[in-house]
Length: 297
Image 1 (cartoon, rainbow, N blue to C red):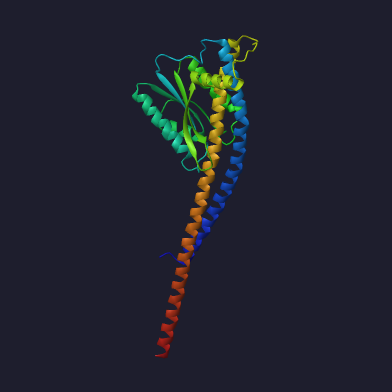
Image 2: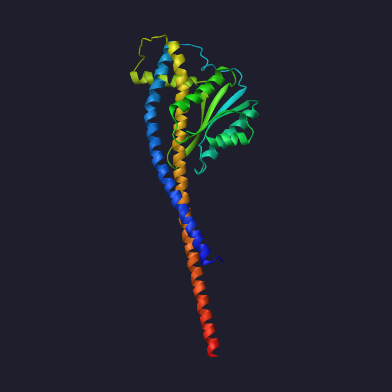
């Protein structure tokens, strides 16, 4: 049985740990609110940009652009895995990597080569540790991604797609539902899905009760050619923001659970410490009584 001093040291150590986890929970909670505000601010821009792209595509008619081109035979697939730079967030990083590797096995079983682009230190280190084909990695912005970070990733994957280095690009990230729920999402980035334009066109026509005529300057094809890369940047930026909010929500939940577990352990150790103290006091009383009996005898 552990001594009273040992139990006191353990209680003190766990109490200090609980202070840290409580502080981390509060920091994650504040960052989560900011991340949610950034997502809400970005959504109207993304929706309007999709409407503009759909209207331009409708005016341009049948066009052949590199980012819309669908390869007849897909030989190489690029997976963009979005994780955090730090741990202590429960299964946040692990579930993205698990889904990415499952997707990799599916593509390899179909005879396709898989290349990785990663955002976040956890994805970078895991992919390198496994000796997989890592084309490019970005780190240092998982807590607060900027649009320029999304642009860097979008330009890299778009260039790989246009050059024929990859035939398909998918993004794996945690989609934010709530502080308790983060859903692993697999989204196709390239080629740009045709159904995205078609669905948006139908919504636009329904909203305006019929087609709307516009004058385009320059030609619709040229405008669409400029908008498509912006769409890729926006989709990746959305994934980065969703991942940032999910990371803070997962960390807040994990730290709350850790604080709760620490409190329960402190209660258990305190009870054991009280029992040990009572046992020591009882032992001292018995020794005193035994000594008094020996002297009186």
